[in-house]
Length: 622
Image 1: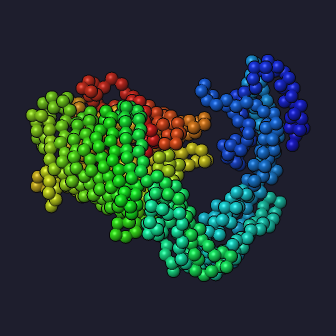
Image 2: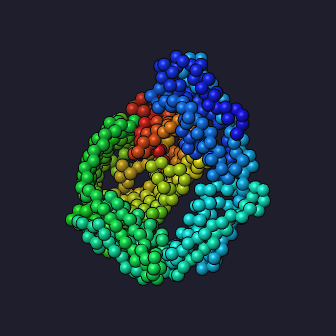
């Protein structure tokens, strides 16, 4: 450490003596903490391990006080942090502590000399011949530390754990892996992982503890293994996840036994602690689209036993309101399948139309793992839709209303809807409410009419792809593409007006209000279309504490014909946004600006007067 750093106590003491008024009124506030020379490590992680932290710049944010002893310790923590991440020569070369003119705030600058890192030359796997060649190569390729990387101690430990898990995932329940390092140069080293696999093992008897009102059979059937199967560590973690997904247990743990005797048939113990099976939740919120909203839900997660789930929900907002009831039978006929029933009496009030729906849906869902799922549904509803008064007053729409199956006198459309639908989704994100890495792929197909009974006859196809990529462990680039089409089917095609496609709003083209992007009537009112294409890109940047910034670009449009989209007709908007992280997801505020407005668009019956929209909601836009 430099001479300047060695005399830190004397320097800071003189600093405090120079600010007696500040000590009388309170401690010195840390207004700014700056690091120079941080290149090889994540600066956010470095700041997180230090006791000396910069206070919030927001008036209501948390303020931080300067502590001399903590700052002295932090200079040593900086070196320890770098050493653990493969920089043994890193040091604090200098620092600067400056008081403001009022002698109440201090700005701290820390200069770091990282030095040359200790790099990994190679990882050798010794004793892993029990694995198949492809398994051996996959383990080598997927190591968290690769040749040429700085020797991060946390990643070294993670590499050993991954090697142990690779053996235990392929039948070797008692496998152990030793680790040693050998220097191959002044700033290079190699790691040797030596395996002791032990005997090939299989699952043995299962013991269940802690169940009370939930039968042992419910616990047993959620296990993804049975006695006699080849032992797999990941089968234990998958089973534990499935038990938590039932929402019956506050605690669930599965542990293998028999390590002391190394039994060939490994017994396992499942320990659970039941939680509350009946829950009543209430929520109140506000968004620019729904305005004020109130929600009340009652749920029973062990309805009539068997881990059946039943619930009743009521909601009111300016956008939609009504009552829904649902029932879910898990483990329907066999593992991974569930059967659900949903019923509703619901009213929707959009700018372009209103709709009343009474009916229900039966859904068969298959979820074999946390990533991939599919479902097939049968929908039976009675629908009554009515277009807005402004659209009804537009005489140029008369013939089009007749073509759409609406009564031109009152703009009303009603009938019975019987439809079959199929959905598939592949989700590799860890948290869909605020994803930072991974992707979501989904597709939806729906058909009504033709050989099915009912008033309406149409088909609907849609697909969506989302991708999230972290950059430098701080920034996130999020992208979304969505497309779909709907059209009449058979000799008497009728598409429910409520199924017509619109864009615009907090979750799509943010430069426009909700459902303002679609084909227009002769007077300029959005009336919905049959084909839709949209895409969005966002750069999400952390700012201060839980506050983040976003810059976005949206593109998309809706066309009146089926599969009639053309990229030259796309509407574009861009703008900034703010995100504030909360336990229920980020609170979102976006301002979108139209880059190419829609000519002749009417908003609330009047010509559009501004090219920007503000949106306030909860959760990411996608």
